[in-house]
Length: 191
Image (cartoon, rainbow, N blue to C red):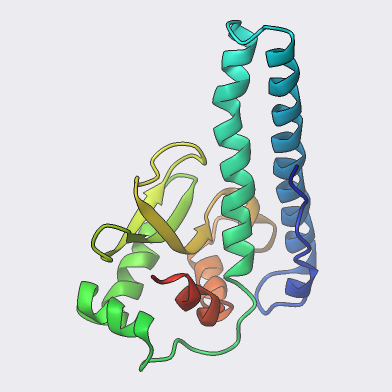
C-alpha cells in the first residue's frame, strides 16, 4: 500500500500561501487514499471471481487516474522548495541548450505550455530512447503521457494549484513556481 508523503517543508514558500499548499496536500492525500482503496477492491473482486464485471473494469480504468494523480503530485511537490538557480554549467542546462538552443528558449517554451488554456500538467520529459528533452501538455492524469519518457520537471496547472492565491492569474502562479524550483532534484532525474 502507498503512504502519503509529508511535504510540509514547502510551507512558507515564496509566492504560494500556506492555505493553498495545505489544500493541495489534502487533495494529494486523497489520491493516495483512493489508490489504496482501488487496489484493495480489485484484489477482493479477484478473490470473488468478479474480474469480468463492469464494476471491475471501471475500477481498473479509474486506477490510472488515482495512481497518476498521486505520482504526478509527488513529482510536483518534490521538484519545489528550491532557492538556487539552475546551474548553468550543469548537465541539465547543457542538455536544455542542446535540445532547445538555450535555457531561455526552453523556459519560454515550458512557460507557454503551462499557460495554455485548459487544465492539466506541463511536464518536461526526457525520452528514454535517445535522451531528448520534450515539453508536453498532459490534459488528464491518466491520458497523454508519452510512452518511454521520464518526467523531469512537473508543473500542476489544474485550478486547485493556483486559484486560491492567483484567481485566474496563471502567469503569476507560473512565475512563483519558477522561483521555487529545486533544480538539484530536477537535474537528479536526468538520465
